[in-house]
Image (cartoon, rainbow, N blue to C red; front, side, top):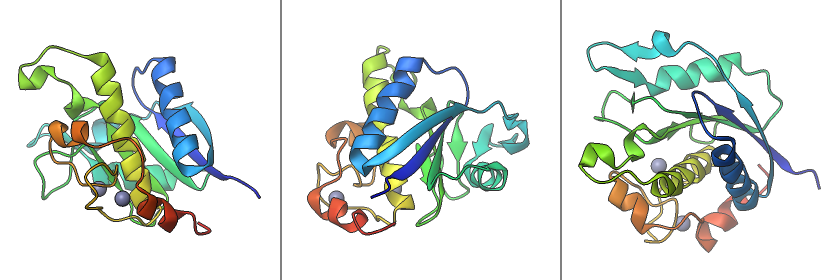
Length: 178
Ligand SMILES: [Zn+2]
Ligand SMILES: [Zn+2]
């Protein structure tokens, strides 16, 4: 059976090992072939000066139009502060049952909350955001199981309390042909 293919598109300076870890997570969690590439698009077009943040929905639309990939899903990994109009900030955003998602590490760092920086913790949180947003592209909705990665997360503490994995129920829903 041909595997699903998922492409990671990194924007900004990420360590190779960071991207590799995420690629392994995605491959395992979605039984997918994962490729990664860097994107050098100028994000200024998506900057909203009044909010000093970047418009996640515009960015997703741009990615959908730009991408010539044959991959089933794409997720952009970035470092800027993302928003959607109804929320103060977001960790990530996805097109439900769509092709495209986005995740940012900007809000995952400890420093803005007055705590010591912790790269491992940031990576751990980011991995969960990526798996979560891709879950939406596969048609998963928010899950009530406390440990499930599809549980909704508003604060970093919410991310820290859940695991990186899909619960069995969520997993059964995406094992259908995509
Ligand atoms: Zn969600
Ligand atoms: Zn679940």
